[in-house]
Length: 431
Image (cartoon, rainbow, N blue to C red):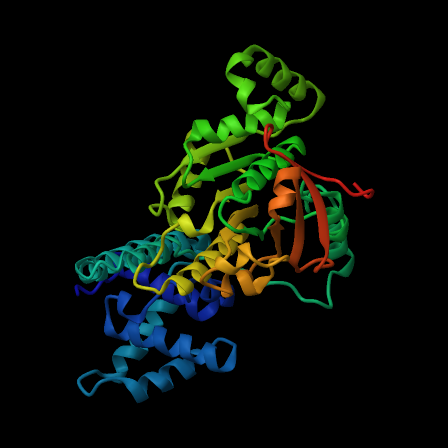
């Protein structure tokens, strides 16, 4: 593999080294992006190695004397120590005006690191293509393109208590995403938050997609922008479902009442601050989390649409690293969706299937999850849709809250299901 080295002028490379050895903030930003071999000269390579290893061990910057002492120890037999001493003088004599704006040096380092990482990922992908390990290729490319100098050190628990609670209670900075069910919202102290993953569990044909459509409408009526990703229905079919849920017009009547449909949607827009809904169909088993990530960037760039909520219908129809067993893949997909929610500061809703026992038990719990229990671990809210044949005939069902990271779990919410209008509403007194 061809070794990538800086093509910057000598004094630019010296300037980078000067900032690395004298500015802790600069070092912390470039540490994830700089490798010793990127420097053109062996003396620069060894100096950077000494500085970074010293910092890793002692959590501070070494003095010039320490750098030179360590250089004496690790230099090769054909190198002169006097060359290192002269190079240190050259580095320290860099024109201070050239160092006044370290942002320029950071930009150079970041751009080079991205380019080098991407080239390396592409070269490594050649062998992966031959073995059809496409999931690993996606992972390597994603890691390469996300190389950056951002340093997020978290927060000190014992400091900034008032500011922290102000953030937690300020609705502008911490939006609450409601479900369509008051009892669930009450247990969550208002609803879900951004950077969270919620999941609905049900056997085939029991209403996963219907629930996700109701959730999309509920979020829109609360003023949130929603992206609905369908992996089995066309965009028009999803829109047709939303038509009935928004307007309460029967599915069978929609084609004959398009004028009424438009009137009711216009009326909703005047009564509520309705958030936009964008619908996107991906072929079944062709969309990975990286596909969703790329699509989010397209929406932002071409439509200036940045969603608050993403609905993915549904988990098993996504794809990823096909070399993994299915149970590992589903857990990995759930982890990546949770990561996507954090990365883009939004809420992700999805659904998953039960195993065969899910049709037989009165209450679906985590024991009936198909293929992977691990996919539930990273979720913030999980509930199952439970329905007997009699309940189906009567338009009834029961939601069972299997997991709630931020509120009460293990309780049942009775709901009414109107299959003609595809609505799901809570029916007990608290609703």
